[in-house]
Image (cartoon, rainbow, N blue to C red):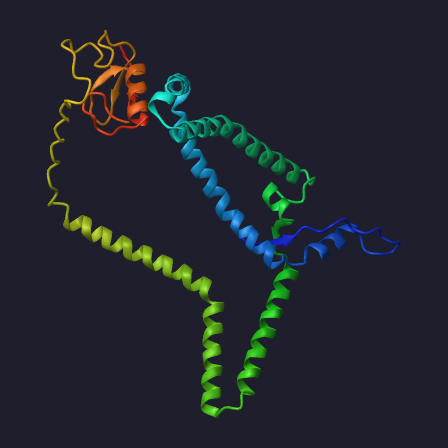
Length: 307
């Protein structure tokens, strides 16, 4: 996209009458390339920060539950487990639960602070108040800007100078004419591939898509009359002897043994129950209450009456 990282300039020195403007001086200061340390830190930030944010979001979703009811059920279960920790768990488990609760409490605030700072930097960058559009880049004293025509000319000039130096070194190596010609031809081939790599990649992508379309159409034409019938669905899992069992009245919840209110279904087994009862059981045990099949809170689906 014609973008490149640059170093954020420091405060411009006072200008004497008749000298260039501060904008031109700033551009000249910005043109200084970034250091190797900035390059490595920028690469680490661009890779590690999104990865850590994604993992933190998944961890928060796993321990915080879904919705207000999930948080209420988790807090009640945590309080009950905390009261019985001296009798049922070790100090390590109790400390782990405290860390998890602290993380679940602090994560929304940290996430909101990061999103707010990013939004503030975007607005400040659009208003030309901030030198960059992201706080992480500002901390590294870096900014992203478009490559100008002068930059392209300078890069091309540096590239040509490097190539001429390589050819001069190949000629002055003191080797035989055949070896010198071979080295020069190899350099020409390398430079040709480097100059046309972008166009070659585009042509290769179009050729690959054309081959994919050709073979896909042929396979669909050959398999048109050989479609197999849809297999029957698997049988539902049977109740486990370690589960809560099924009530005599199928309209009752298998967990609380009362009339099913606010019904919900466990997607991994298909059995119904009260949404608070099933959600609390799955969140605490990670199993279906009837079949003991491994289940997550995401598998508890509420059912609504459309009549």
